[in-house]
Length: 93
Ligand SMILES: [Zn+2]
Image 1 (cartoon, rainbow, N blue to C red):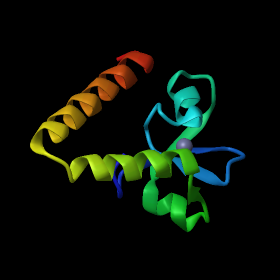
Image 2 (image 1 turned 90 degrees about the horizontal axis):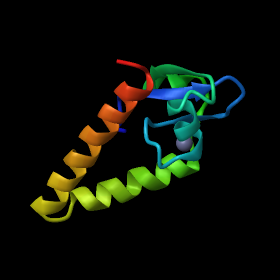
Image 3 (image 1 turned 180 degrees about the vertical axis):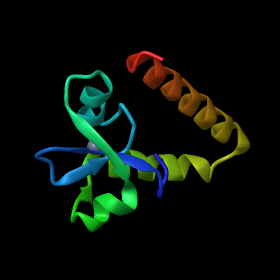
Image 4 (image 1 turned 60 degrees about the horizontal axis):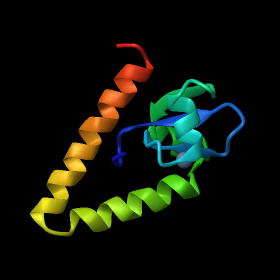
């Protein structure tokens, strides 16, 4: 969930989503309950899609956390690694 990375888009959606299971839509996609396509965030914007409200909120909170102390950054990296591992597990790597 960084700007410039790939994002999820759903077939019917007007929104794009970061790969973050704090968002109900991304969570369904990560669990394989919802079909989605991966595109670059720039491409999603060009398609007229906007960032989903849930993902935007999480993104803002992460930005705030990153401005905190070094301890918070370590926790954030730990969480990011955990979600990558979770995603790898979900897609069967
Ligand atoms: Zn979302």
